[in-house]
Length: 320
Image (cartoon, rainbow, N blue to C red; front, side, top):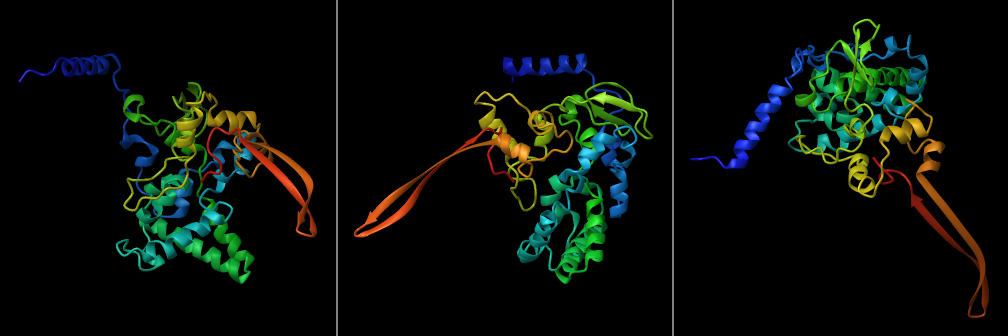
């Protein structure tokens, strides 16, 4: 059978593209940080993505990051850890086919609905790490309820050692389209330029095609329904809102523009908790006037209040 012309042309175009743009040598999923043997403890997983070595050259940026929720993404303000606990008790343990009858049954796959964004590197760990996380979450909650500050702080510190650190954005997730742009090298940090990078274990620096683009943030902030999971969940929606509402209306700012540069917060990427971000995101106009209302023979003083809220953010509010 003769193939349609457009199919033949498409195949020819792909062949030419493959010839003109050969895949970079030495790149592949088996040569990335994520391809290392699976971590068997929280300490091992934390060490793999430890941001401490970056302090020597990037002290100011590290200080900014340390003030953000990225620096303790699994624990959060405590709300994230508590929500994971609730997910186990009121979700996993009540779903008949989850395989979770008690917290001791929780495995990595059970936590990925939350960890996909709060700790994506958990996919590189064994179920022993999932159990260690669960143990610390429950220990923290119990210590808080019992007023045992020392135990609560210890569990919090362990959980906070797992975070969205420098190597998550500047290596592991620095390339989104891996078949066309290659896989991130395990000895390279990615940013806005190429060159040498005088740091142990990471002697090279390369430009990332997405470092200044919103899709970098969109990998976590706004994936919508996680339909690839055994039990899909939906949490953040910012990136979808950004693409489907803000951009079509003519918006041209990136996530980094608002949350890093315009806010002057740098790597301390805040959202609604920051007065700076809240003021920039929403304009509030309030008008109030007093009136006297007559109800039959009774005169009642009342007030009329008009509130107009205008969203200047690049996505829907609230989010998450």
